[in-house]
Amino acid sequence: MKKKILLGRTISHIVLFAGAATMLVPFFWMLSSSLKELGEVFVFPPTLIGKRLVWENYAQISARFSYLTYFMNSVKVSAWVVCFQIFTSATAGYVFAKLHFKGRDKIFLLYLATMMIPFHVTVITNFLQMSIYGLVNTLWALMLPASVSAFGTFLMRQFFVTVPNELIEAAKIDGCNPFTTFLRIALPLAKSTIATLGIFCFMNTWNDYFTPLVYMNDMRKYTLPLGLASMKGMYSTDWPVLMAASVIAVLPVLIAFLFAQDAFVKGVMMSGLKD
Image 1 (spheres, rainbow, N blue to C red):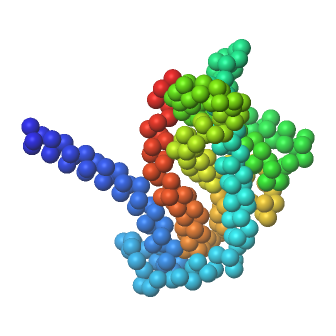
Image 2 (image 1 turned 90 degrees about the horizontal axis):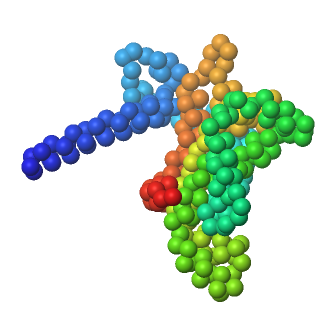
Image 3 (image 1 turned 45 degrees about the vertical axis):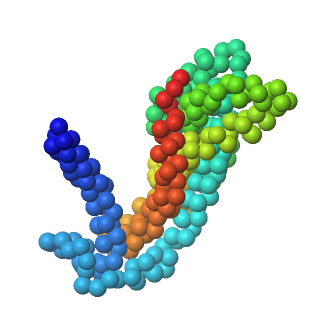
């Protein structure tokens, strides 16, 4: 029996290691390419490290491209979307989980059904709406529509369902109104789920390429994914510099996940398991 358990664990670790290597190798190759000269990127057989580490590739990013502008645009959009999406999702999730009103469950199901509609189906109507409001080619076209999320509402609602009703009733007895109960009782309990939603929201917004491509035509308004794409030349591309820019673009997502990974794992475990 012990041999079978040991064999099973060994196989599991081998499979997990292979999966981790599949995910990590492209990142290591991106980092390696960012420290090579242009002629060393496509040599065969490939080399992990070039003849020398070309740190100048990182210095050339801002000198040749408006990288700081792209980066700050992404920071502004991501910060707005994360903050407002967490706020709207948490409040809506609490309403659907703990407040009782006519048609609550039907409204929630109808709202949840919007997740079935791909973004690409509604892109034309969304663009026309933003055009009517005069928001095309502005960062508001990226921030306002993303301030609400059916998925975020579902995630928060599933957590608030698990909050004991006795806590809510006790807060009512102490004279708390629904908003105070939400703010002082329910919200502090949802820190792990909020961290999970924040990570998902930040990653989706930071890496979004299609939405800025639809709304932006001024390079000064480009976000980082669109800016990285614009760094590719029509006839030639300085791949080491582009890889260096990509390394910097990945760092905020990596840092955010490393700091919030414990809360992220806990939030995934606690959310969506009870109805």
